[in-house]
Length: 193
Image 1 (cartoon, rainbow, N blue to C red):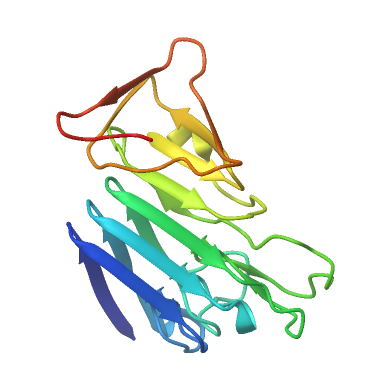
Image 2: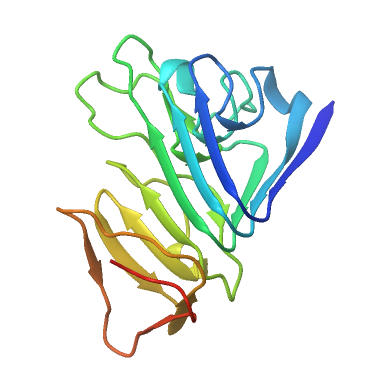
């Protein structure tokens, strides 16, 4: 089997995949032969996949699914930093890849608008800001998240208090909801615009 680890602690990462592999994660392969982890602790990360053949933006490439194709074998942890993930869906394939994580679903109708979000964690004290563009949400446990997650432009604070450590911008058309008994703190020198 093939196992590897990707750890991003800072800086700016621009990752784009036009093939079967994930932008950040595994290449294409077969079943359980590929496994490993992607951990993002800080920095600004842009990950885009063109959506062909079920590959993720961050997670697994196509063909890396065990017998149950809704569950993959790459552990994705995003504890800090600012992460932008997008899968550009391709109506020419039966598999729609996850924006972040390790799932794909076969035989999705061509008119489905959004890729999937599956199987990523934030840690119990995470402070990441994660933007997942135009995403349908499938198979994750948001009760385990801690940080800020934007799904299709709607941002929610997870956890009672989140202190962002890196600057980010809320674009036109996006909203961040600070719910009841939620606190958003901003570290010194960090701006939210």
